[in-house]
Image 1 (cartoon, rainbow, N blue to C red):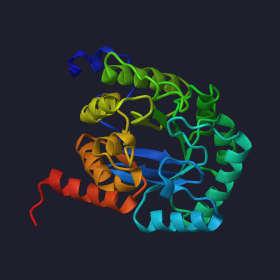
Image 2: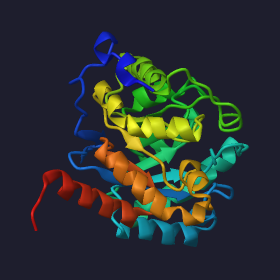
Image 3: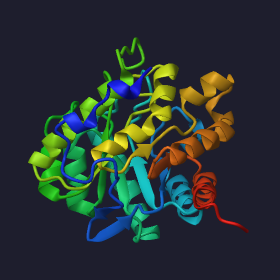
Length: 301
């Protein structure tokens, strides 16, 4: 596909330097620097997330997982309690909130210095955890489209917000994803939603193209190849490809065998401008960040 049809200069882009991503976001009372890309470690407190080894069902499992994520160098901990894998059926709100309360408390005990991201599309869940624990980031896979109250919650509490593109819902999104120009359509979506958030006073926004969320394998690779286009919005870009179908389907393996593929695509994402890597395996991603920095600086050892 041709990206030449995209003309960010003709769009109502949000305030900021076009083509240059912001280099920090506010996380509570602190600034998280993105001058060098950072790694977000996934902690799933679910029973049905697509990668079985990521599931933490007990307090001791959560504790061990959080300790591992911190030890390996994550800058953000991302907690999810309602699987959004393709075809998933959502758990009820009460169960999601109970799971997350236990997990957030453990993170606050073990790593009070780390920002917590809550992976939820439910405004009431987000608000409860912001008010009770002061969580710093809301990671909403629906960009406010599955709960119209979400933007208001984010604006009211002044937390950072991960704006993800999705076509459909987790239950239906992979049935027949269709685009005329996937890059242009995702970019248009971002511009419109960012302008809505800005109008409400939301300052700290991260863009996630939503790999695997209503996209074919071809769509995913087109987005990855053109990831730098989204920098035109002037906001940090997050890449979440970890062990997803765009890797294991191509390699004809299971998610458990998709680590090397994940490392390869994480590296491509970094070279194409990603500032945050959302991953199951933190240490390999941290190492990829370091190696890409050396490569880009043309350091001589």
